Length: 333
Image (cartoon, rainbow, N blue to C red; front, side):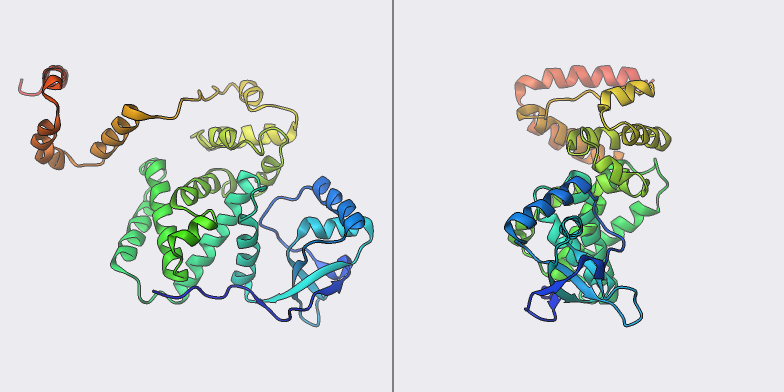
């Protein structure tokens, strides 16, 4: 298995003093909150800068000598207060620099759900790029996972169930992480990159960020909905892309509007929150979901085994349900 590469290479351990005016911003992964940046500026003025920003050196013809890698809000705060910035110089290609930004930000618990999804997507893209550059030594399991993901992507929208697509992408991305970085499970968990986290974050990205590159930051900074993961999942669950876009636009234009108000205004039904399945319901949901994935032939082959697992007291109920279903389907007539 490949060893974990060094993703950040400071050219010097010395902390540099730079002017905010000498640092270009460039395109960012996360959302920008001016009020947060201004507040950080006040704190830096009073207490000093606790953590250096990270910058990369530009070419000799660039208008500014540096470009920001990490620390947008600290940079803005320093601009507001006329402060010099503490900075560390880092090096790397575009993929590496993007991953430095994503890896540092994904570990900060204060990130909004959509910001976090953006960072996780960037880490996944970096893994994908490195895998494409050196894809030798893939295990058979990784090859199979990649094949499943490629097949899922090739299907038209609506043919592949969204839950299956989410699972396929999570498997695919987790396999890439393991292959490229050699991350152990403990490391992945420390970074908050469990398979479930990857699945949820990438699903949010696919539904709310990728289709709406000009809107998602406004949604991420919405005072009511932006930090509410449950509300964001409700928005993501809207199947019709036009309705989803109209809902996001309505929220972005009206910062004090709740999700329910925005949905009512567009004539959309508010999703009903259901209790998380527990106990017998959880096991039943897992069982029926797994059975639904099997072909008719596979279901026929395991039918005797299913009957054997049933408790005797449940057999009459099973027979009654089978008789009713056979009559409903008109089988044997």
